[in-house]
Length: 450
Image (cartoon, rainbow, N blue to C red):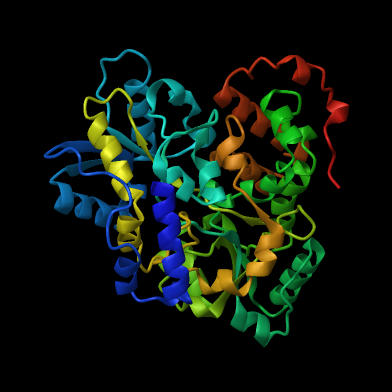
């Protein structure tokens, strides 16, 4: 019945809301005039939500929680922490002792990021929830752990690549590159004009974003499995050496500027506003969430970071609202998630947000002009976020070894990859015992880079 109800309203949207991206907000209530799912079944509860401090500052989350309180009388008490504080609290809460304080809900990215918390044992299984069919394929992939839907993706869905200043490219007659070689040529032309080609927030290791080109390597499931099962290491991963060498090449040629080691997150906005830098590795929605300049001056191109030859766009990393299955208020936690997954509600709280749709019936949000302009190219070169969510032990912080590779001439590619891999393996622990089929697969069977 619920699937039929969704289909009916999708038809109404098609008939009554042409150009739905530009539809005024009142049309959303016309399309979904009543709740689609059953929620509001529990009253006067207070739910405790844990999450990272920066992640919990999203306005649409506050809007959803306020709307839930108004409609049900239930409240959400947010307890926010730094990355380290949250990691320590979660480790204590779900280590198995059962004595530490636990949240009712957790806002976290999924996949291998939460593997150490044993989701099968501790997190509610939403696989049979009616809203699962309303998720886009990209969103659904981010919810899965061991084949189960462990949380509701409630986040902006960005597309990542390289943002570029259209005015500077036009001024100096530079075509938007379509290959790795053309990208380096564009950098050289900009440098000769006194423009630093790329702003790199080097002081923040996690902002080197080396996972973008990795995603293209890991599209082959056999490569991903071999890496996770210990049959491949980073040095043997096809193209991985090209990725870390790209950073050194860019630094040595001056394409990050002479003082790039001092650049950090706080410099991103002024760098893009000022015109001294032409490009930055980033995601399209940053232009509408953090940038104080004119977003229309910028376009997005693929991430040309060593591999693949035509560059790549990375799909979104979506934070999930996860329910603690041991919570004494589990019924209320599931009720809140159902409420937030209802198009009757999310089309109000996500109205006007610059994002690709997370839900199939998401009609109030807006795709960025950068995405619309490059939609066909994005569809051709798009990769799901794989390294960050599916490589065991992966951490953006391991870019610290890439930083060293850039700064120390004697610290070569082999040493960099060896140290990155050791850090990843130490974090992940022993690889899972391969089954009979996997154990018969030798390294020679793993496809190499094209």
